[in-house]
Length: 431
Image (cartoon, rainbow, N blue to C red; front, side):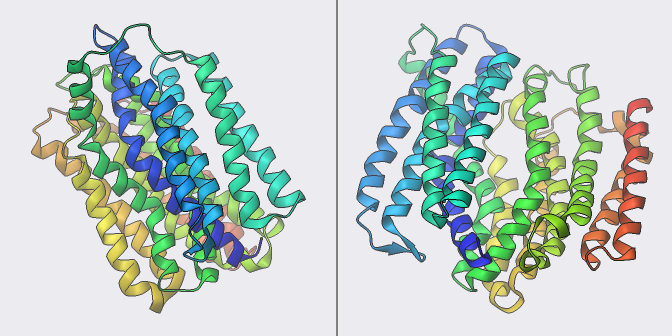
């Protein structure tokens, strides 16, 4: 696909995902707490959220998709393509909001591996068939999303059955009270990662949107790894008590602090070394954008730590939108003001600034809620953090340098040495 086509496909996906973000993603925190803690109310809450994700969302979204199919065009994309993408989005909560999170919270590795590996395989194979082999472009992208989402949802229903307990009106009210404050928070998180593309499409060319989307997707490799690692440790935060940390999160936070910086550095080094051979020259300008955006992904990884204590350990989701909302507002305003003048580079800097703002605000929220967290418990880790920061800086320099130049190779080598030092220190540090 050309940068223009890729920009259209990425903008389509980014705009469509808002459906899941608003109507399903806010349930994730409730699903994790109910599955990890159990108790008398856990099964009933899981039944209510499962029915919603398995049956209610796909049906409601399908009705909307039928109506959208008759719209001629939205943001340069035909209405029937939007309808296909919406159908795909309707099936996604079954796997990605309910089934996989139940398996994670229960630490059921077998079901989690089946769900995740099947989803990845279906997505990869269908993209290769419809986009690469059949060359159906944006239409093939949407059909691929629908096929992989529908088959993944069928597997989710088969593997993760609903509890036999039926919810009462009390359970429903509790679920609504817990989830409603997280809707604006989830929408803001979507804005942080995806709003820049449709917003930029309104003020700039699809080629610039395509380069920005490509840089974002490279950076989101780091975000994906960090997010999945955070998902794996959420049960520890759900079982945490105050004053924190106890044994539940002491070691977890240590590795999250280092991983949030080391993982983006590794991704940056990988792109700097292999990008020339994998991607066409038309996309090389996006390498620098990816370097800037990887700094934002590091901030995103650090954001998880205070937010987990606030939402999972303390069960206080109400004010989480203040952190994500501040970052999203900064990105939107910056895109509209600077997107046309500075193009993808200006939006990349704005996106990174948004993630940094979100991370700082999350830490402030733990302070304002007076959560008793002894942050000094990890002060012995500071040399490892310093190594990790230096590694990330060096890897970003590699991406900002001419492709495969001596400076790029040297910066990558220095970064890898610093990554090894930071990781080794994290293993042996006394915190």
